[in-house]
Length: 117
View 1 (cartoon, rainbow, N blue to C red):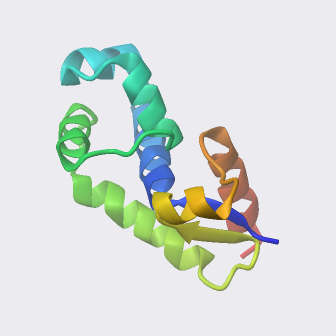
View 2 (view 1 turned 60 degrees about the vertical axis):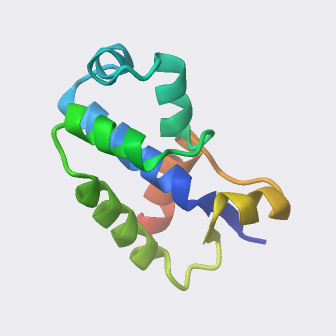
């Protein structure tokens, strides 16, 4: 049986990775964006659906373009194509299909699965 991960979770994970690469904490991003720290945490974990507005504002704070984040997500999806252990679905599909990976579990699963290729 494969694990599910959502497109939304992959976007959140890429934002988390970018923030960590910059050495910035959520409180700083919260101040720069006007998005509360709990909401930022939920977005990074894929527990909340990110809006286009939020993506643009967060990317500005993280000194990147939304297209950079989406290209990174596309790259991960391309690498996962054909992998039977992890399936990427929409949030709606994942919620109706059962449990799915979010937050740190995504990073762990991606690191393990992508290292095998």
